Image 1: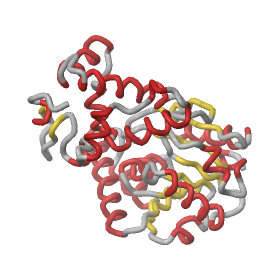
Image 2 (image 1 turned 90 degrees about the horizontal axis):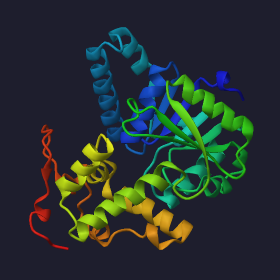
Image 3 (image 1 turned 60 degrees about the vertical axis):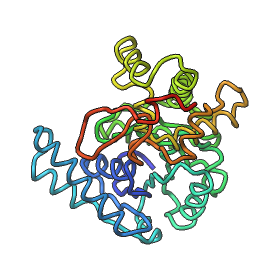
Length: 304
């Protein structure tokens, strides 16, 4: 199958990444089926996509007619068989949990058309391992979008051990059609994006844990000294501390080097339910509607 032949795309998962992926495919002219297990999650996702497109209309990067057309190209489904029956490409964007993803790909392999490419938005889980539970490992690939998907230009395209060159070429060109910049990586723990990013975040957490500097100081040093748009602790909150911990565990277990071992502070925060933006508090405290960065009260005195 060539890139130009793909017109029907299914996205599994309607969370932050899933609805963002649906957004960019729909605005690029693709017919999109969005699948989740709960209709209320799908309804929230559609509202989010509409709200984000409204921002584009306000900025003049999308017209009202284009918005209406894009939203009209998205259908929602709670039944996987129905969602994938016409799919030429499936992009899985479920929670970063290996058992969940393997189960989804087993189902996709049974339900999706024979020629359909199966892509995962995983940020760290082995594409080779995912492909091994299917009978089409040559058509399994990583398509790692960045958050927020409608804004961020990068797509990390990850080859599994058995991924065919034709499939890699197809996904590369397809990413360009979405207005993204694809970069190809091979299937090693963390790929490139998270193999480089997560150790930096982890070291920032260790520095906080050891009292080298405070939350604001660590983030300010990286923003002003290294030209990062967001400090590593704020970025960890944005990603989700539970997701950061999961990726670090993949790196630590997959590579075996102790330098990837998660900071004790990170482990404790996740166990205590301080997950960042999603829980309302991590290294910073988040108040709905406020853009002010307020350091979490748990760091006003040292507890580590």
